[in-house]
Image (cartoon, rainbow, N blue to C red; front, side):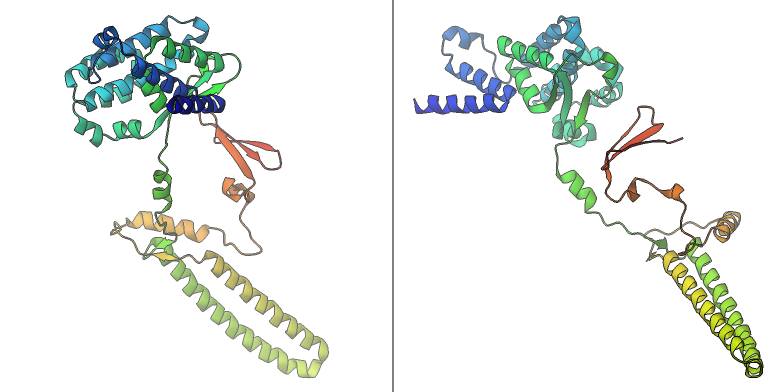
Length: 367
């Protein structure tokens, strides 16, 4: 009695939280364990019988193709994930011949939308191939996300419950995430993104973010040689200007003793302007300064004409300082100061739209 009470509470909890597939799987498992008649035992297939995958998928396929036209295109979305995982389960269990026959029997159903993946999986003949193939590992580690309307989702649950399709129920419950929306079924033209493979591994993003990024100029690059040449020329020019200015100041000071105060004020003003100019140059050098990174690989020799072209471009580039800031044309999403909440790109890749925290929406063309 205590076990039955516990099972009833668990089922009520799953029903209250909306875990319909888990609730259905628990109910089917309980019904299977409670069945003790000899006829059911004699008719049941062993757990390692490869025919259970063929029968389960074939029945699900027939039901989906014979469903109402209004919901058929949504229910057919379940077939590709079911087909892929039935095939990989057969291979992983060592049923190579049965897996091959199953693949050839139903591959035409998915040739139009998934031909590239099918070509890669066609050569999978052993469990070792599943471990070595990147596509197979990705399919095993991630789940499919499928969008269905509420009524299509209910039809699928009713089918799984009435037919007691335990194999299909296990695959769907383990390998598919459903996004159920209220209202009518989505249009057939929207099928581009209604079936997608989404990652469930949290370590992938962490591994990418843990890689150290080295910013800066490579040592002994064309840019570095150009900066050294410019700094040397600027230093020589500044020294010559300082020498000329010092000579002029001496002449003016000697004349200032005769002419009086107004000339002394002018000399002070010239000194102030000179100091400001030096500060501007120092700010420019600080802005342009970049860390140096030692190349891990030997850089190939740059042809002379290419290097001359690069040097010419570097000579003609605008010098940045506090009086000459970059153009607003360089403004990107990286400069939104955490004001960008979401963004999306059009299907043809020609437009990008961003939603901002001030409730504004900005559309920008890529072309």
